[in-house]
Image (cartoon, rainbow, N blue to C red; front, side, top):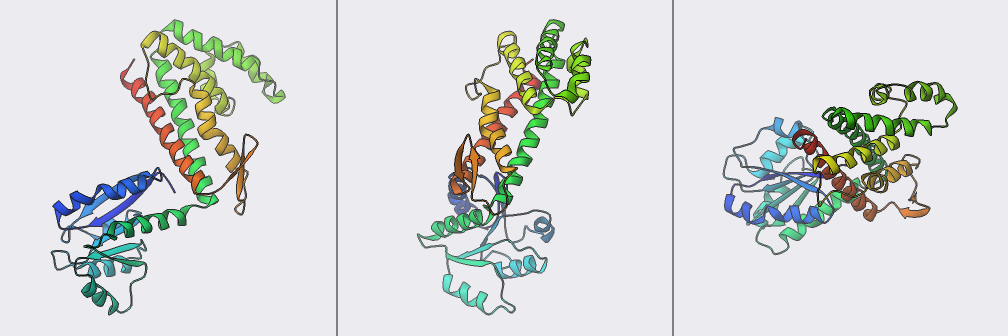
Length: 310
């Protein structure tokens, strides 16, 4: 599971395709999924395009304008052990069904729709929702959230490093002073030798950055808060889409869910968030996709400013 839904769409009629291509995007948008749709025509495909890509759904016009009719393409796809769900559609619905039904062996994972029917797009929506529901279990959710959190925290540290590198001496010294204040509050016994060492260093930041196990992610969020204060005051950083309190936003959107999910078993039906039991259901999946999409945008804003704004 991730925030993207990949569709491979075989359709020769370009004008018709352009008239309907946004419909899957609208359906997926309701689930906070990003549509990645690739169009192919009958003569423009190679089995290697599929075996190297994990598509979630294949949409197939049965009567493509080539020697490769839809059933021939799908037989080749299945022969390559690509098991993605396929929706066949055609203006000649009855003849399409007859042609598919006589195939031997029959093709698994195939659905059918009448291109002329008003229910054609309803069929696509129901199939997309079935595929989404099939992926919505706690194992997928936990992997999705933990992987995203790991990526975000790595990128946040990289942003901190790249932004601080462009600061002047006074600004760098200010970050070091505040980091020493943070370190002085550490009361973990085994950390005390490092607390004393890093509290006396000229460049505390450089020393702590090299010691990957010393500073927890929550403390790097404090450093980012201090960095953002300097950016706003000295460099004019502002964005209507960026949260006022990045640390609290990251904690509420990502960290508390990562921590809750990391301690859940495969058969658990709820997670605890701020003392409240939250069902592991479609609503939670939508919430996490939205949260992760939002965080992607926030961090991208920081990355862009680090590259171009200083």
